[in-house]
Structure formats: C-alpha cells, structure tokens
Length: 346
Image (tube, rainbow, N blue to C red; front, side, top):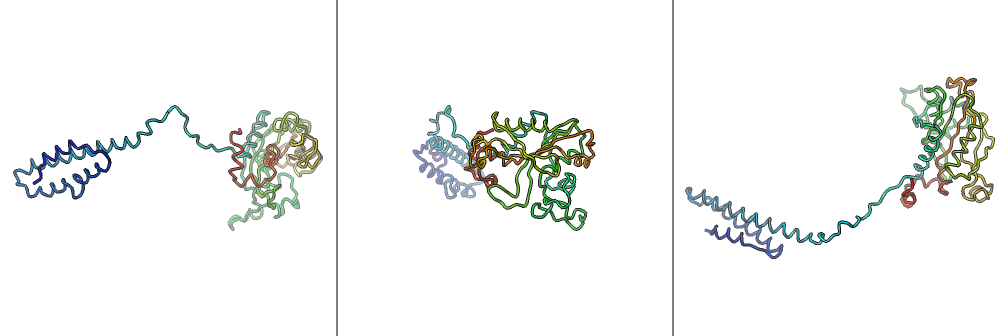
C-alpha cells in the first residue's frame, strides 16, 4: 500500500517551475486515475478498526494537494497578468465614441428655446386626426385640394367604427394642435406646436412623405399684424443672425386672412444672389397671417373681442438653410458620416 505520510510530505515540498509541471502534479494526485482515487478505492480493503485513521490520512493528503495546487495556480495567474502592473493609472483611458444630436432635433430645440423667451409654451397632439381638427375647424372647404387622396394619407377603419369612415387621416400639418388648444383654453393663448406631419408626395431632394413642422399662434385682445411681423423678425435674427432681414409677400391660407409668405435674406450669399436663392437674395422659410375670424368662431372664441396671428414652418427647411444642406432625404437615411458632423453641437 502507498505510504500516505510520504505522499503528504511530497505535496508540501512540491515547487513547480511552470504550468506544465503543476498540471502533471494535479493529474497525479487529483485526476480521475490519480493517487487519491486509488486510495479511496482501497478503503474497503482496510480492516474496520483502521478505517478511521486511514480515512483521516487520505483526507489530509487531499487537502495538502489541493492547497498546493491552488497556491501555485494563483501564483502563475498573477505572473501572467504581471505586465499590467506597469500600467500608468494616471494616464487617460481610451475615449468612448460619443453620439450626437440629430440636426433636426438641434433645430427643433433651438426654435422652442427662441419662442419660449417671448412667452410661448409648447403644445402637442395626436398624429392621427379626424376631419374636424385637421380640416373643417381650420376653414378648409369640402372641395379644398388638401382633402384629395393625392395629398393626404387617409386611414381605413374597422366596420364597427363606420362613423369615422373617410374622416381619419395622418395629420397634414400641426395646425390641428392649435384647434385642440383653442377648444380647451380661453384667450390669451400663446403657444407653438412642433411635430411630425405626413403628405402623399413624391420623395425628392426637396420633398418627402413625412417631415416636421413648428406652427405657432397668439390670441389676445388687440393683436395686430405688426405684432406678427416683430415676432417673426425676432425669431429670424435669433436663428440666423442679427443681420438677417425679412420680407412678407401676400399669399393665401384657408385659416388666415390676410396671409403672407415670409422670406429671409439668403444665409449663403447674404442677399447678394446665388443659386440657392435663385439669385434673388431671398429664401422663403414660412407662411403666416392673421387668424381668420371664422376659425375663432369655429372654436367658440369671440372674434369681435379677440384677434390673433399664426405661423408655420418646416423644421427641415430651417435646418437646410442653417447648415447648408441641399438634400432633404439625408435627414432620414441614418448615414453615420452625416450625423457625425454634428458631434458637440448643442
């Protein structure tokens, strides 16, 4: 039979030079066919009165072998990572790549910030709208082209919702939010309504089937067109620079009267004329006007006591002018090379 005391002394004096010698030691003592397996198998051959002492000796050998194995295993692992002990912990770590705000988000936040400084709050509403909020309350007559399937994404409804058939659609403008605000709030009202809108248009460098708008309006006693002009001049100079000029041209919108298109002096050529402004020196950025009295009355606001103005702009158009971007489609393509250009912009 094996001399267990001698084996215990051998394990205590064992000092491997490398991992290979340590693995040989493990296999010899602790492996499936090792010394300890052999000794445990011989337990049944030991006389009953000697089994207790024999078992204690075998257990002592097992503990000694495992302790020695773990001791040198830890030592070799520390040696393998020893090169890391020379790292200068005061050095900066490798930088983690940071994301960026989308340019549309940057401009949206900028617009909200500008108008919030002059008392406008922010309102929101659903993207699926009914005919009243999207068209009728805003003075769109039944034969208006915007109601045609070529411009609007109408939504099919379930048979149990027949009352909504032909009236539900993806909103074509955020003016629908203005209607909801007027329904639930008495004047004075001063708010802007940013959001995504949808129109059934061919996708090109200058048009898309979905885009983003910010519309705003102000209703109170004695609100005039001069208030509208000064508000938009303030916005334009805060967004594009103090030297920016504006001009208002007569136009038509169903929910405002009088109505106007607003141009700003070209941000590229500074009004001198270039291909961006078609050599006019001016670039159109929004539509505006005084709220039609019929719209006020539709929303139970006394048009003889109150007046107001409204305006609306496409965030994509403002962003293209601010950052000299020529193709509208790039905003929704998630091209990392494009988005990386806005890192650090706030």
